[in-house]
Image (tube, rainbow, N blue to C red):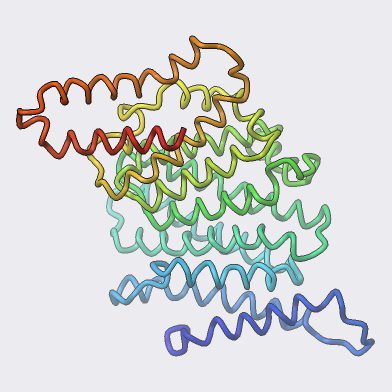
Length: 362
């Protein structure tokens, strides 16, 4: 029934969000029954989104996942609603995620799988990853406890396992919508469980340690950075993914203690020592001029990481600036041949604009 009244979903979710948000302040003794009916609302929303995927794919309809503004708005509302009777929300998400992930893995390993079936499972997993991110992000809406954190741990482990699967296949191509959902999930996970104000003895970290061997925050941060590097390496053709990825990197490097933990990671040192188009294609001249704006954000984040313990180490600073120095020399050589076709080429224009964007970030 989802396709008959799509414009009413916002208002329905808004009504239930406000009712659920008021529960902690209810003083009346009469039962409000929200704990009875709210899980049904959550379940109906989730299952209707998943059921819509096959119809959208098979009939070529407009995909609700293309309207990211609408998706984020509904997820913010659901993050409050889903936290009411949270154990039921988590049980449903675990069940549906395991079903879709298992079928997706079977399709990928099958030699005669139809692409349309793969696309449908990617769509279902995209919705589930978005919804899991919103469920975790809703933690601030209610007074959480260890039991809820343990449930969040179950959800986080599943998304990270799916990420490992999809990243291992990026050489064969990937699903842009699913990657954007992953980035939305990482942003919610970062806000709630990573950073200066988070208790690291949370049950989430205990579950991550048991299932994935991620024993402390440094190891979790390395997962974030590896994901960022992977996206920058393989998704240079997608401006959406690059910008969202760089925003995640920027958010990670803002925190005082977080940035100090980041700079100790091998993955971060790799970025500081290898920020060239060879490793990160979006830094090359093969992208559109309009997409070069992201480069300033990238270098702002690298600058924060570099300055943590740079001190007066001139050699390290010179080494960091080497790719930019080479770009200056390349442009200088072009200026020396101002009368040649090389100077007037589109590549020369992009090289100058790219360098200016990089310097602006620093």
